[in-house]
Structures are given as C-alpha cells and as structure tokens.
Length: 301
Image (cartoon, one colour):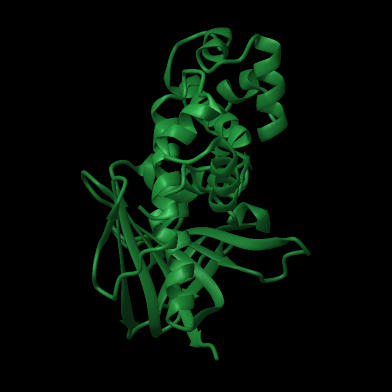
C-alpha cells in the first residue's frame, strides 16, 4: 500500500465518524502506522495536523446541518462533540468569521476545508480519459473555439485566498456574487436561451491580494448591455477540465476544488501554464451537475 493510500483510509474513516470521538490511536490503526509516524505523514499529505483537520471537517458538516436540518444550535454542537453552545460558537466564528446563528439566518455561503482525495495528487490520466473518484468524474480535453463567445454579468474583487478553495475557510464572496447575479439576470438583454453561465477570473484592476471575478451568462455575439460587465471568451485553443457530481452543491463545493487540484497538476505534468484568465463554464443539466474549467495555456520550459 502506498503512503497516500494509508492516509486516505484514515481520511475516509474520519468522514464516516464525524459525530463520534475519533482517537488518534484508532486512526493510526486504520492506516496501519504508528501514532507518531501517522501524525507526521497525515500533516504532510493533508496539509493540516490531524486534530485541526477533524475540527474543520466537523464544523463543515455542522454548518451543512444548520442550513438543512431543523435542529437547535446546541443540539448540533453536542452532536459534533462540542461541550457547549459557547464553545461551538467560538470555534465556528474563529473559522468562518460569523456565528452559527448569523449563518443559519442568512443566505451566506461558506468556503470549507474539503475532504481531500489524495489520488488526485498521485494518479495521472491522458487526455480524453475519465478519472473517477469519490463520486465525481473528471476528464481533460483540448477544445478549439473558432468563434468568440460573449458573456454579460456583474463583477467584483474577491480575495485571492478564496481561490484556494478547499484549503481556506471563510465566507464565499464568489457565491454571494452569483446570488446577486441571478437576481438581475432576467433583466439582461440578448441572453441566449438555454445558454451557458460563465465565471471569469482575472486580475484586471484589482488591488493587491485580490482578483476580479465576473459572474455572467452568454448573450448573442456582438451585443452589449449598459450598466453590466462584459467578458469575451476569445477564439483560441483551450485546456478544458470537465467534471460532474451528484448535485450542484457538491459540484460547486468539494468537486470544484478537487478538479482544480487535478487540473493544476495535469498542466504542470504536461509543461503547461495558464495565461491571463481562467473560466468556469456552467451547463444546465438534469440529474448530475456538470461544470468545465477553461484555461488558455502556454508551454513552460
């Protein structure tokens, strides 16, 4: 068994026992390692000490319960091993910058520390070969765009650290922007019926530590709309990483981070680097949700 496979077994065990006490000795036993070596290897591969990782995953699941289950905050706290309402609130605010009560009564979305799929760091596939892992399917292709496409929407500056989706915890400014966009989308003229929505990410005039993010939808080529932002997807060759998940929530949370992780490694392996922007192409689907990462690339030495 490879080292990453041993740690993945412990990661999977944690995910299945988040409402229980999880002793280090049990996790080390699951990974067939000594407690000392297990903790060192876990921190190296997961990028978090095991106890901190467990806390972050408990809080992530607790946050989901706060929005989806009609239970008291104290019951949620106790269910995930917190001794009191106060200790849960303190930990929640420390991680997300917002209290559980504020979160439950708002439409805020959170960036979570995602359960890692370590296989994405060690297994490589060729173009046009799907990779299946933990309920998601990823596939990298090259796509030639012969005619530019135009997207109109709204843009804002977001912290660059939010691009570290899956490894940073905070309020999601990108999700908030999408909520605002969907409120005004019906007012945008010249929308293509059943067209794609598109998230464009670029530096633009953003201040240090931030980047520009535009949430938009496709319009007829050559049109514009006063008062909105416009992004042109140029005619060019793109590296496209398509991936699907069982639900839109899964797609835009853990799946998008896992796809990003694999895409970055795939491009590095093929001596490619992204150029001036990256895009997220959303598809209207029934059943499984589907999304594509689009990047223009250059060859590196």
